[in-house]
Length: 332
Ligand code: NAP
Image: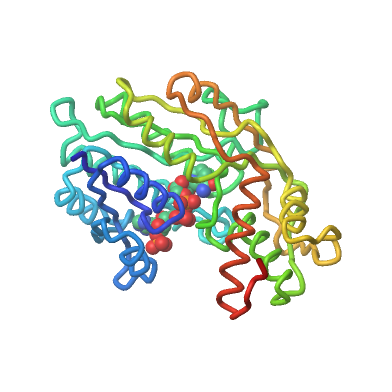
C-alpha cells in the first residue's frame, strides 16, 4: 500500500485529503501539533484509519522523527498559519510556520530520503494570495507574485524554496497554487464560513446581525473536495511541476452574502448586514481569478462543484449543525 504523510491533517484540506487518499488505498499518517490538540481528538473519532504522529513545522527534529515512523511515499505539506488576518498581527509566527516550515519539511525529506534512489514525493500548498496586487488577469503559473500580507509573503518563500530544492537537489517537489477553496469543514474565521454560518443562525433566530469588512473584494472560490484531487494528481506525474488550481470564475463577497441569505429564503440581506472598518486589512487583495488550463491539460483535473452549489452545500450544513446545537427541529 502506498503511504502518505500529511501536515495540517486537522485542517479543512487535511481532512478532505486523508479521506480521499484512504479511498485510494493509501496508509495515511497525519502530523498533529501541541500536547492536547482538541482537533486531533475529533479526527481520531471521525477518521480512525489515520495514524497520528506528533510534530510541529517550527521544529525540525520532530519532522524528521515523524517521517522516520511514517516512511512515506508522498508528503503533503498543508500545515500553516493560513488565516490572512491573523498573519498581520502574528507576522513572525506566520513567517516561521508558513514560510520556514516548508524549508524544514524539505530538509527533513532530504535527510530521510528524497533522492533519486528513494524519492519521497513532496506537495507544497502554495496560494493565490501570492499574486496579491495582481499583475495580470487571469493569473497563471507564470504571473509574477506581489503578495499583500505576511501570509502571502511567507507562501512566496515556501513556493520559491520548493522550486529551488527541486532544481538544486532533484527532489520530486510540486507546488500547487490553489485559489480559495471552501466547504463545510472551513474554519469559522474564514469569510465564506462566517457568512454561511451567520445566514443559517439568522434564519434560525440565533443571531441578529452579520458584521463584515469590505464586500467588494472578489475571489475565485472552489470546493475543497475537488481541489485535494488536484494535489494528488500532481504527485502522480512523471515529472514534478507547479500548477494553478482554480475555477476560472470570480465572485464578490457581496454576491456570496446575497447567495447565502437567498439559500435560507431571505432576499433583503442588507437589513442584517453591517460593515465595520475594524475588519479592513492594512493591504487588501482586490481581485483574484485563476487560469487552470495547465492543470486541465496535463493533470486532466476539472472542478465539479460550482459557486452556487458550494454556497448551498455550506449553508445547508450550517443550518443542520446550528439547529442541532440549539435543539431546533428543521421542517422538511
Ligand atoms: P486550515 O484549515 O487553516 O488548516 C491549517 C492546518 O495547519 C491545521 O491543521 C493546523 O493545525 C496546522 N498548523 C498550524 N500551525 C502548525 C504548525 N506550527 N505545525 C504543524 N501544523 C500546523 O487550512 P486549509 O484551508 O486546510 O489549507 C491547507 C493549506 O493550503 C494551508 O497551507 C493553506 O495556507 C493553503 N491554502 C489554502 C487555501 C484555501 O482556500 N483553503 C488556498 C490556498 C492555499 P491545528 O488544527 O492544530 O491548528
